[in-house]
Length: 324
Image (cartoon, rainbow, N blue to C red):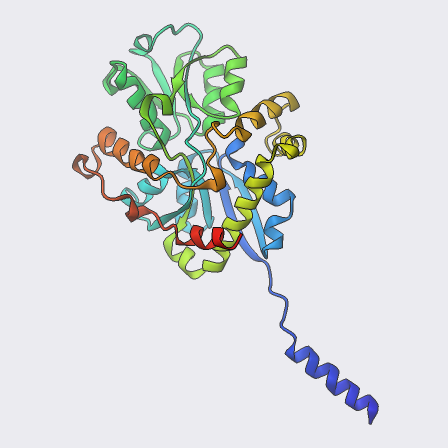
């Protein structure tokens, strides 16, 4: 009788005990670069796992692959220039929403060593990822501010920033492109010349941002909140200069860069003025300028952009931060 009573008690205990929740899979797509540091840190520090997430990270070669993959459900969250989210909504009619910021793009205009002024780019080739989004629009505007219209040069679609740097190394007919970390530093080591930054020329700009399909976010609200929390925790850990050595090794591991370059990139990343937003906050003025630039350079919306709230839902971010 006692044995039977014990078995009954154990059975009731097992029934009443809540089952351990399975890990939620989040498929994330990014460009390889320092802007993904928070993801690297959250992975290596177990911060995603701590919040019940399993993150499958994919590096993309270009923004077309990223946007199409997100639209088809191959990926759940994309981290790239906010203008890509706008383009998905306006050009592809995909209902995506920006849920978090990241950086100001950290882009600089880089040219071949023989180019001595922007006027020298007349009649030359410039390299872009996609011809009608994001950092290509930055490039066009910077050239326009210096007297060059789009008819004054040729646009060559190459792909992501690493591919554009490789193209400039291997094809000297490609005279200019936009580059950010770590490829901007590599370009300078290779002798390419820097003609200013996008932020210096254009003002605030919302570069890397996190976004996903609106329906997916609504259906997975807790997952989205937990993802943002782990991301922000990873960002805080990585920006803590006490963790510099360990954080720099993540750049070596994930991006296959040399340790001295990783240390140089880290110093920019951790600098409050380096372009990476505290806690990945979205820069509303920068996002407004994204829309303004698209309206001006692509003639979108008849030149008058809609309110930025059309593309943003920061309710997930607010929940995430309130729980940290």
